[in-house]
Length: 598
Image (cartoon, rainbow, N blue to C red; front, side, top):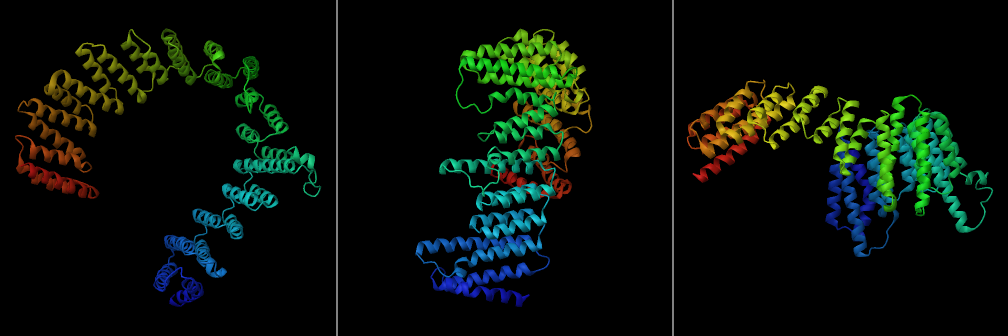
C-alpha cells in the first residue's frame, strides 16, 4: 500500500512545483497539500473501500481548486502549463473514476460526477461519463433524457441525441417519460430550424434535411407519437399528455389534429377525451376576446360536453365523470369570466348542478361543491335542501352529513343520531364534536350534555373515546369543579384498558389545577393515585410523568420530599435506556431550580 501511495504522490510533484513557483501556494502550503493527499490516499486504499472516503477527498480537492482560482485572479498570475492549470481538476476526475469502479451501482455518485463535469465545462469527459453510466444503468429513463439533452443543447448534435433516445427506448419501450421527451426534442429541433431559416432568410440546404417540407411540418414528431401509442396502447392519459407539449410550439395545428382525432377514435366515450375536445378552443389564446366571441365559444364548449355525456350512454360511472368534467369547466368560467358575463356563468353553473343532481349524476365531491356554492351565494335554505339530497344519494358520506348538520337548525340531535348510524364508526368523531359543540352553544340541560359525552365515550371507537373523554373532563371541571371532575375521571378510567396517556395527562392537569385554585384536602392523595396508575402503564416511556410526580412532592404544599429519592431511583430503573439521560438532565435542572427557590 505504501508503494502505491508513494507512486501516486510522485506523479503529482511537477504540478505542485509549478503551483509553488508561480506563487499561488507557498512551500509550507504545498507540504500541507501533500500531507493531506497522502492521508486521503491511505484511506482510499484500505479494505473495504468506503464511498465517504472518496467523497471527502473530492470535497478537499474542490475547495483547493476554488482557492487556486481565487489566488490566481487576485495575484494576477498568468496561465501556466496545461498540466498545472488543470492538475487539480484532473485529480478530481480521477477520484470520481476510482470511486465509480468500486461503486458502479451508485446512481447518485454518477450524477455527482456528471454535475462536476458540467460545472467545469469538460464536454468530452462528460460524454464518456454518460456512456459509462448508461451502460451500468440502462433502465433509468431520466439518465437517457439527461444524456440526450446534453448532446442536443451543449454539443449541438441532434443525431447523437436522437440516437441516445432511440437506444433508451429500445431498452425501456414502456417509459412514458422517454417517449414524451423524444417527442419534445423533435419539436424543439424543428422549431430551431424554422427560426434559423427565418433569421437567415434562406431555404434549407438539401443536404441538411432530405425532406424539408415534411420535416418543417413536424413529420418527425408525428412519427414519434405514432410509435409511442403503438408501444403503449389503450392509455388515454398518456396520449393526452402529448398535447401540453404540442401547445408550447407554433405551427403545430396538424399535429394537434392528429392527437385529437386519435384519442377520439380510440376512446370515443372517455370523459378525459371529451374534456380535452371541449377545452381545445380555449387553448393558446393570444388576444383578448369580446363578450360576443366568449359567449359563442362557451356555447360550442357546452355542446361538446353534452355530446360527450350523450356518447356515454347508460354507463352511470362514465356519465358521472362527464358531468364532473363539465361542472369543473363551469366553475372555471365563473372564476375567469369578465364581470359583464359573470352572472350568466353563475346561472349556467347552478343549472348544471341542478340538472346533474335531478338525474342522479352528481358525484359526492360535486354535491359538496354544490352545497358550498349555495352557501357562498347566501342561499342557506337551498343549501340545506341540497345537503339532504346529497346524504340520500351518499348515505355514508361524512362530508355531506357535516354539511347537512351545519345547515340544520331544528332536531339536530335526531339528525346526528341518523348520521352516526350511516357513517362508518371509525370516521364519526367530527359528528360527535359537532353534536357536543351544538349542545354547549345552545345551553342544553347538564344531564343531557353529560349523557351525550357518555355516549361518545361508549361508542367503541378509540379516537372518539379519547376526544370525548378529554372534553367531558374539561366540561365537568367548568360546571362542577374538581369534585365533579373526579367522579367523571374515575368512571372513565374504568371504561377502557389500557387508558390513553392523554387521558391520564388531562386528569392530572385538572387535579393540579384544582389543588392550586381551591384545595379540598384530598387533591394530593388523588394526584398520587393518578401518577401511580399512569406510571404503571407508561412509566417506561414517558419521563415527563416521573418528573411531574417528583415536582409535585418537591413544590406543592403537603408534598412528601422524602419520596423524591425513591421516585428518582424507580425512574432510572424503569425508563428505557435511551430516555434516562433526558430524564437525568431535566431532573437536575428541576432540582437546582427548586434549591434556588428554597
